[in-house]
Amino acid sequence: MPLFAANLTLLFNEVPMLDRPDWARRTGFDGVEVLFPYDHPVADWERALGDLPMALINTPPGDWLSGDRGFAARPGDEAVFRDGFLHAADYATRLKVPTVHVMAGVARGPQAEATFTENLTWAAEQAPGLRLSIEPLNPEDMPGYFLNDYDQAARIIDDIGNPRIGLQFDLWHAARLHGDAHLVWRQHRDRINHVQIAGFPARNEPGGGGFSLPDLCDQVAGMDRVWIAAEYRPSRGTAQGLFWLNALKSRGTPIGD
Figure 1 (cartoon, rainbow, N blue to C red):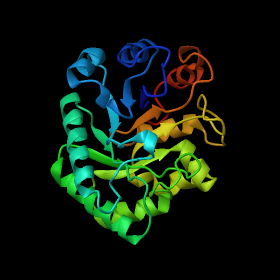
Figure 2: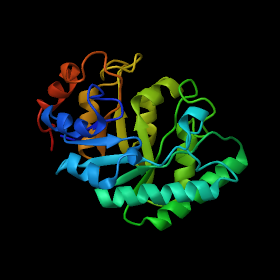
Figure 3: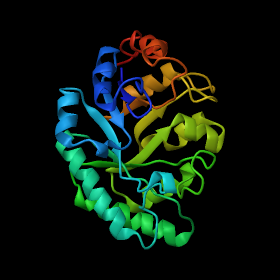
């Protein structure tokens, strides 16, 4: 059975952020992820987490309200990206977070791809103890975001050729971008180092969209240190909507493991 993480940015928002790890623990999650943990000092996170693992954080996005979505692919913002990445790597190292999602930002064109590739290569060199992930995001939810195609992401990963740089597979974005999330999974499974799930098409509790969550769990269980993170908008109180988690965890160990 794979490990399940609660995305604390979206789940358990009935309570303050630093109370959410305890809710995640008590409702059956094995760990958590947080998009941007930087509003709270590391020491506060350590107290809130206790022994609960944090599976993933994102690099700082910049001024979100002004439209910033990261800097890794933005020509001319190399210094901004690199300062932000070192900040993220410090949080990740001190909180024992294995994976940092490198946000590309709003950009386009060949120069943006070259900048993205150079920054990813640099980041991997600076943080040899971390895995990095990149995630294609759909343009309806993230207008102008540079990385918006799984084949594009795969090409960049293959061109760099660093085994610590992998693909973040989000069922919601894969379905929105390419229609057939199953096909995306089959084509890129070997590059994936983090998984996120949500219901389709409403992005509520996981399920629907033609993707079998039990099958996904069975496949992820055989992958190296890959978490399944719940990143969705609860349609009710978060704890009341965890029927999907209880059903998946009650299945036990997949056949053949």
